[in-house]
Image (cartoon, rainbow, N blue to C red; front, side, top):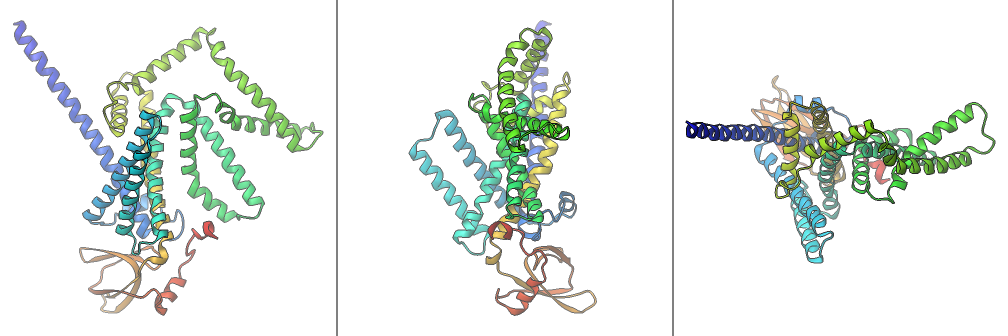
Amino acid sequence: MSFINSFFEKKFEHAQSLFFDMRFLFFGFTLISSLGFLIIYSFLYGYYFSGNEIFQISNFSIVSNVMPFNLQTLTITSIFFICIYYIFSIFISLIIKKKGMKLNNFIIFVFTALILNVSITMFFANEVTFTSMVSFCLIWGFVGLIICYIYVAIKTMEHSFVTIKGFAFHIVVFAFSLFVLNSMGILGELETLKIISVFSVPSLLIITTIFHFFHGKEWFKLISYLPITLIISVLILLILEKYNLIFISNIITLSILALLLHFIILKLMKWLPKITKWLPKMSGIKRKFSINTKIDLGMKEGKEKKGFVYNVISQCYSMLSNKANNTPKLAIGLILLLAFVLLPRLSLSCGQLIRMINQSYEKPIKITYVKQSGKESNLFGNYYIENNSTLYVSNKCWELEIIKPVNYHIKSVNKEDQENKENKKMCKNQNWFDIFVK
């Protein structure tokens, strides 16, 4: 009888493990395929159909009218992105494990990256020039931002206060930089808004990544608490100014306040761990949080041989399937929501920016088509997709036009063609990228 019980127990454990693996595989496949499709699709949409104005279209508009990009285009573009990701991951792992990179490994990395970048340029651009090759380096920056987002999302679960400090530092530095550029007359109000739209999210990800990477260093504490000091100093300055308690210039007062408060905050943060030891309740809460964090985000020993993406998905799945604690589920839900909104938007902006740099090299086309009424018409464009006798055309302004002609004829035209030049002049806000290259 005991033999039969042990036999069924083993079979049940095996079936339960298999069921868990199937659920995990389904979760991982759904997450990677859906997010991967949105990123690749948004990049292609941004490159061909996003127009010349930043944030001209919403994420909803992009996915509600899906462009029928063929499978070959989506597959090859996905392969390029995956290759870039793996080159990045190998480069980072070599630096972390060996605490530096040998010269031969660095040469191999640069050579591989250069070949891949040339391949991407040859695939997308009409002309392979130095400008086009440099422009497609932006894809590397975008993949780097994806890695930064995943890194920050995981570290935020462990050190949320570090993310808050990075966010505050980003706001202070970004606002101060724009204020200086605006006051010097370099940027106008419209250009300032465009720069905020383009660079706010990438700079936030980079700064928060730096904060999490160096937060344990003593020298970095001098910088990390600076935004909190400045915010408090400005608030105190406004209060003093309201009650006429300032007897010297505002700049000198702000400098004195910032120095004093920064010294006080650094001392408080240094003594805070010692103070919490004398408070049993605070110590218990902190210990409980640390244990939960270790269970959820640790487990490095068994996962070092697995890939970075596998570890991230595995941790997300473990948190979501944990019925005992609902707090991590809320955090994971927020992280996934931001990923499905921000990463496709960044991908679209990346494709749009690359195309704007290479816009002068693109060869236009002329579509002569017959309408349903039998009338003949012409349409100048830059790219088209044909699906079920419907033409999805990127017009002269790189905006989407959909036509269903009875018959059509497409031919390439010279960029110097007079009719083509006149059509190009009709585009409004021809290139918002011009504000960065003036």
